[in-house]
Image 1: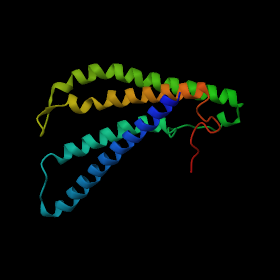
Image 2 (image 1 turned 90 degrees about the vertical axis):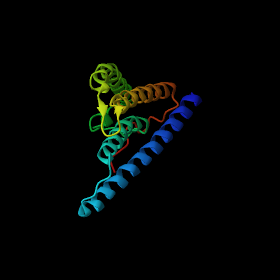
Image 3 (image 1 turned 120 degrees about the horizontal axis):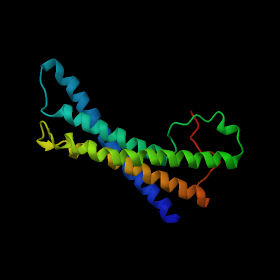
Length: 167
């Protein structure tokens, strides 16, 4: 189980670092576009770069939220239940989220095969290079769900607070 804890920690840190870089790219491009607007100037391809970094950041953010237990949960009734039932519902929720993401991975192959062959202008590359982030991020979400379930069942995951409380 120590290996799973390490994988969870390292993979989460790696994804968070990628997201920070992509968000910085997103922020720099948007600020540059706003500052260049009065001069009626443009940078070739920045709109596509903004879309790609936003898509990637959003997709990876869902997987990281599972790892950090920061996904949406309404716990008003669950918090009133005995600890065993609460943990069981937490595991069931993770299994359902994992199954949904697994289904999205499966369905995305046909989705990518259609428009994925179209050329993404202005870069001249197939759109599938960009669209592949969706099944990749969903696969990471499935992996994080499986890790969290395994760590919870083995007792290596703290189950005192299952969902992060609102600030």
